[in-house]
Length: 204
Ligand SMILES: Nc1ncnc2c1ncn2[C@@H]1O[C@H](COP(=O)(O)OP(=O)(O)O)[C@@H](O)[C@H]1O
Ligand SMILES: Nc1ccn([C@@H]2O[C@H](COP(=O)(O)O)[C@@H](O)[C@H]2O)c(=O)n1
Image (spheres, rainbow, N blue to C red):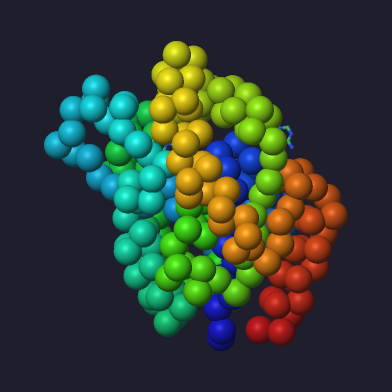
């Protein structure tokens, strides 16, 4: 069985998870979903005050070597136990996520297309686009509700690291994508990808 890897990138709050979750809801256990965010580096020995101020939007913040290794293992037909990230602690949790090899694996993350090894592995590369003002407004709501953040913390992080890194490392990868989709709620893009995935599953 040849594994098809689909990379879904785009800025924070662009709708990557929204798009990915719609596909997961449609195909269930027929597809795997792996989040690059789960590969943020461990910071066991770093005090919380320091963790809160770190740059999480630079490629070095992520252990991409481990993600590449896990994707190679899955492509070779071996299951892996992937890390699970806890945003409230700015650290990996003690849990792991067991991932079985599947015909279709979706990988999602802001910096996926910034890594040449990952770009070369993906059969389909997607970039989800949304205006910066909409992205930050969505992020504020989400990070307060789901990631245990304060408004002051979100604004400071956005201005010091998230925004500058987006224009340095994330937005330039738009040009590397096969498909650029306008919003994670785009029904036409969803239908195109759902049809493609269905065909790939039937061929397998
Ligand atoms: N097109 C949209 N319109 C309104 N809200 C949206 C849209 N896309 C995403 N959201 C909301 O914005 C938040 C961030 O979206 P998410 O898919 O998690 O973005 P990403 O994974 O790219 O960071 C979520 O709460 C989601 O429900
Ligand atoms: N400890 C962390 C780790 C990451 N982030 C932020 O997550 C963003 C990526 O996730 P999206 O779902 O928004 O794509 C990224 O912009 C990091 O700033 C964080 O805040 N804290």
